[in-house]
Length: 497
Image (cartoon, rainbow, N blue to C red):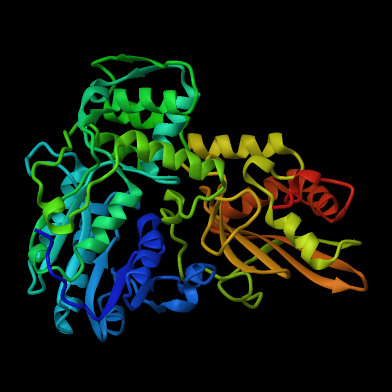
């Protein structure tokens, strides 16, 4: 049966800045719902096309007091939050956050909580990642508000962590030595189907208080998934050699080296691959009357989105490396929070501000970092070997950025076209670092100020900064000059649409 809907009133989306959340919000709007987005940093949503159609509130699931205002007047809420990869205590942090969310929802008489968890039979041998997903569902359901827990396996969509891991492994390695999980059964789901299910259970009484397993049309294995990817992408057949001795830790380090995923995220994901994740009933179809697409169709859709530069969200939208809020910001007074070290370059350009800013906005990713690309690659490799993210994340779009976007080992912290772009470093550092450009009109051209700023942590932070000063001279001054020169860097100019 297809459940009859009960209008939920205003809908809260916690995790609206994440991979699924950013895609869910426009689907809810299209279905006629009033949406309130919850984010730790509301500015990260301001560049979304739908930003003027939603209400955005600042709140954090780890801060119980901040949730009361977020839940005021809410009829139903989505919980799309997790702490995977955020530290050794991420499972305990997830449980506490779920309890906070559950209690805040009960406090206002919210009618339904919808949670996106992970497929897998409840058992003692579940991976830590899947066990944590189930723990969160149990924590949410321990309150008085009915919970609909959707459980999904691998999500196939442009920019998803699973898709990027699959894509990079298959494209980079013609021969893969894989552990036994390569033959584990899995039921991947396309992101479009997942969104249909997420919207479809909202306000449906039959979904209330239920665990709803969702998956695509095919049950397959990871070996078959990689083979189909190679075929769909026009690659030669990949040879997969399973071995019994590759431990999850070695597997995650290997995945971390070959794919954009850092080891702290790759490890829990790889651990989960040993568990069979297959839908066991037809409840999702009965509730929503939706038939999902095949794995191949989801794969081809994701590949087309990548080819069309239409990647709406990325796994990198989720922040694994949160800055300390007590640390100073670049706009703070010089004395705030201690020492702020700085390299400043000022240049004059004949380009108008709009054109100069467009060039600045296009750096990074496949375009590289203007000068000394070898030095940037070495810095990225050192970060990667130390367990950081390196340069592998690239960028979501080759020419356009938005606040909150990942850009190699930076994150867009502030963007005001055509006058300001500020990036905050997410590589491993003994301190906090920013790279910022401010542009102002000057006659028919522009004045650009480029600042590399560093807030050191202790003596090690200061030693780090001063040891790199010779490299700064090789990088930052030439970078500013080249960006300002209209005869340089033609690759940074976006081609006509």
